[in-house]
Length: 248
Figure (cartoon, rainbow, N blue to C red):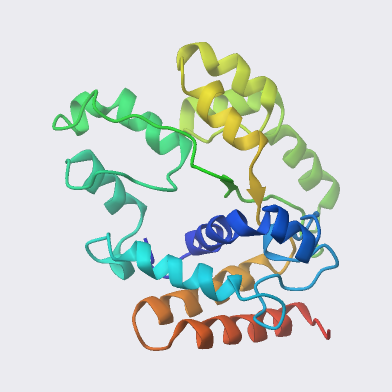
């Protein structure tokens, strides 16, 4: 899907990571490091910058090629993707969420009788991408200690189990995934945990909301046919440099 929203950030990172984590990519860009992740070089430069590699342009082109298989890529978001697959109008949904797939199992008979019992999941080929968000304490918080304690509460094992059971929020703790695994044989450990343990990751920096909006803007401009892939990648690189105040 290519609606202008936050998902494009990790979708682009997922496509780019296939080369980024290859021997050639590691040799050229170095290892992915926190908090920058797969879209940056080891020394903090923007990895898809056309002055560094042409694989950013290639990932952009691949993104649009995949959009040819979506009925209306720029107007489709995740709920429409679920409907298309659940009603048997699509053969595959690449890049879904763990919690969304579980809905096909637990609610399929009631909500999607056309495909109930016919949908399964497997790890993405190559490098999976951790598309999770982050939580942090704002520098402007009036109660930073209490806010920090609340974030710690949210990631406790008991809290993670409750979040999954109540809101289908997938746990980030290996121990919690393993504890829940017996309820979902062949899925939780064999697919979700395996993917999470070898996944690439996006950048986790305070400027992320602006970076997400920027990459969504330029990718959708390209997918919509208003600019070419080279222009989209060059302008995206310029905007990220400006947001992050990079001067290399």
